[in-house]
Length: 125
Length: 180
Ligand SMILES: [Zn+2]
Image (spheres, rainbow over the protein chains, first blue to last red):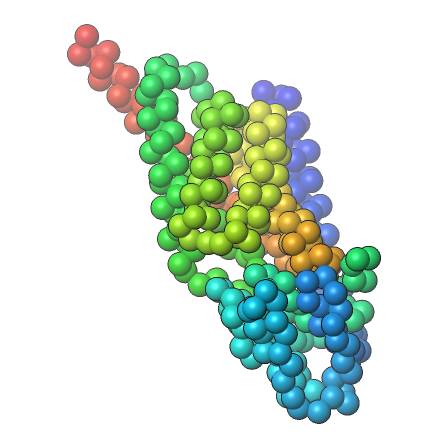
């Protein structure tokens, strides 16, 4: 019984470390200024790098295996306007915000994100 | 935790549990997520997984989860959701089975928290592989936090189910002893 309590204490500590470091990571990523350079990654490749501060309003269509995503740029904001995916999570994310998470369409392998946000650089591939 | 039922009774119960997990999974899939972050959900089917990990051999728990993931993808999803489910589920079990042995029945909720966190980590790893970019790691801290909360919730539910079923079982044994 004593061993089980010790093991439980270790696991509680591990869970606490995971929780607190995740909260810290969220807080830090929300405070970091992201600039205005946005990249669109389709199937692991950066297909487009945009400076939102100077980009005119327009729509970009990206296709993956015949399924289309329409990305809209409006007054310096970028969002997923339409998506041929089953879940539409990408559309519900709304406008890409400097503080938040990238816009991701998992089924269509599409990501829109701030270039120096989200920690890591893009894939080596 | 000592099991007295026959193997046949156990297999029948596993079948019922698998069906229950599948129904919970399919219904939860129909409910739109409140947060627009892929992978954030309560994961109510985890209640059944936790219960199975504590009451069956690891191989039985694995079988239950595999059947649920495969049929769940057939009913509710696509091949891509299968890739996320299976990698989340396998990492979850790989961690939860040894942890549950180490910490025992008093801390079911804690096994569930670790299971949920590992499940979300496995899903993120699958997302990195599928999307061929590490950009999705930006979601990981959010998924870890949601895993802790959802895991604690489903773990407490599993703890309640366990207490309830154990006391029913004892009552059943008692009445059959009285009859004899
Ligand atoms: Zn989408």
